[in-house]
Length: 435
Image (cartoon, rainbow, N blue to C red; front, side, top):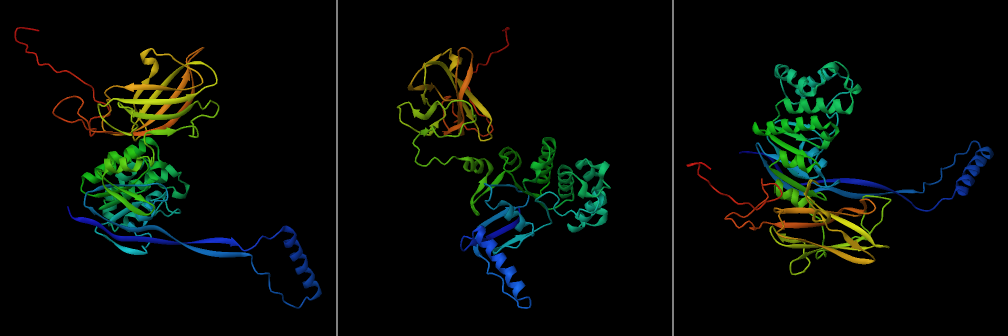
């Protein structure tokens, strides 16, 4: 496929102004100066006085929103752009959309670009929905007849037929987005650029938009999609860019990009996490869990395991009185979905605990497929009635690597295989002579 976007050594610098007060000025000084000024004017009405010099001083700082960013996009690529707030995602899209100029480097684009960067981009608030459809088409370089051909599709997709002849300044943010996306997606741009703006719409409309963007990609057109929704990026895009502090840190397969993006920085952690100061998901309960450790079968601490390996999860606690407790360990994937639950009461175990101590849970033949998982912990009492006491939404992260614990010829990978692999036995029986 031919290259449609080439970005070379791209950089964007902004100059930030900071107000710095040279010295502290008390209220009495302000009043004194004001009274003195009035007095001078009364005594000398025809004499001019220079105002007091300002105590504010402006300092300037250079801020690079993007620096040394280079990549190429082929025709028909569906590229996700991910990164934390302030990473430079929106700045990159504004440069690609020709809204702002780069400070350094160059961008070469081949094809017609339609952008949806924020609510109402490219709309004139005084014009009606109908008039804005034709205006946007003209901006994209389309003939009036081309726009007429697509007009009914746009209105049907946006679901705003009743308000078509109302000025868009009276539209809600949801109506604005529906019409803006419908125009951008249906007027046949070679390159469609969409920012996080879809988050404004309702869930059904978001699904509709994702389906349309997938359709655009399958037609051989190019899609650049910025989102914090990893599920949406995973479904729509086959490649992804990670921006970090204005620099491109990764460009490759979406699955690998998402895994790298969500990877928890646990530098210096050998498999144990102190949880005493960890933020809880509750206000009025007790912080009884003090730490969590992940151990291999030889009791060495680790954060990486093979699928099918035995692991031990050790949870340290501190309680004021003896209680009959339960413990629940949840494994969550990168989307935050719970993929496996281990609960002490599943084995009819009552954990009688008091003072300081630890609970150990042995997981035989870890059945999770390869990937990164967050572990959340729930700790509670069973009597006089079951009630949780302490809950930590993300206590620690572990990485599971590809393993072959099922004993077959094929090693188990998570790609397209869900989250868990179950051991099974297969038998072929002939129907000749009956069962």
